[in-house]
Length: 419
Image 1 (cartoon, helix red, strand yellow):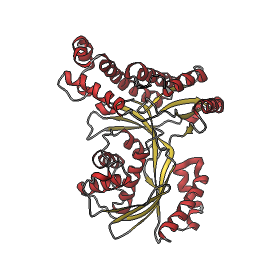
Image 2 (cartoon, rainbow, N blue to C red; image 1 turned 90 degrees about the vertical axis):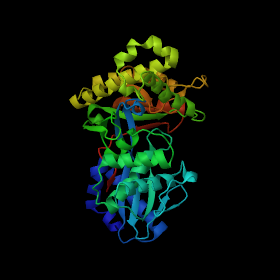
Image 3 (cartoon, rainbow, N blue to C red; image 1 turned 45 degrees about the vertical axis):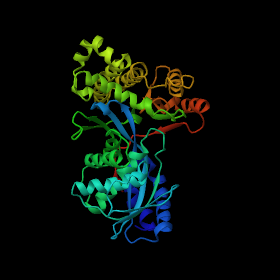
Image 4 (cartoon, one colour; image 1 turned 30 degrees about the vertical axis):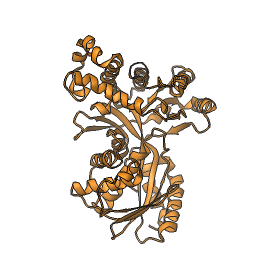
């Protein structure tokens, strides 16, 4: 693609399908992306453009790792790439702001020294394509991303899905489903990147829109898209970065899964989804002796959060935004009281997530909704804010937590795609 084509009405129309009223601004962004590609690799004969969005968790806080249910949504912040296929089997990726990567697809073994790096994600996606019998090969790519790292919007999942989407369209005519691209991405992160993540992030990024996901069978998650437009109800979706220190929180995150698992193990099962809630409630006295009290509280959160996911999806489907907001707040309070991931006991004086939730409740005065977002402890919160008080809300949060701490987002209907 050439600059004249990017500046055409036809390309603007294609951008409008994905970006809506942001299309004109995105046209300038893609112009700059093509210029960057030409600086990196020279003028290409067949440069193509790809996009993968970040995601926001709407319901199902800490449920996916025990085969539970989640409601998530793709957002308008995305990672994009200008790409051209090559015939040498080498993947060259220049991500703006990072060192260039060169991956030889002839080597698809796990490289321990790459753990935790983008190179591991690329190699892992290629390896899984190979294992599943799909085609893959080399390409040159210049990438840039608006998915804020550390914001809880899952920049790593957007990156993985972007790589998978590129290979899908360059070498497989786009025939691989969005769900399978998500599963391939999770495999790359689990096995090559060496992070034991669930499948929620990748699924939301790959599928797009609001998605309800049931992970009872993790090999075949049941995914249901839910059509809903927040803006039509007069609300903005805000993500607030509380600026907390993520250092030394690994044990806090791991304990949630381990404690839920410990309740399941009391019944000889690996995850809570395989244990009836009634059985847990009938045996609390015996369970607590082996697991401690907090594990049971977290298990109760798990069961009720699964029910809330169903209620949230039903409220959106029926257009009942008042019921949706009430359930969002209920979810947040359960995370605070039972899942207990709004501050860490190792540093009780620092409670940025809890403080942000407290301030959100005061600012919204019963008009909106708020909840912890993602892992918790020191990360982000989510708020649904009436349009007429959004400016006041953003200003107040910025004054407390710092400039650029509050982001106004939109739900994006498209997942990973070729533009």
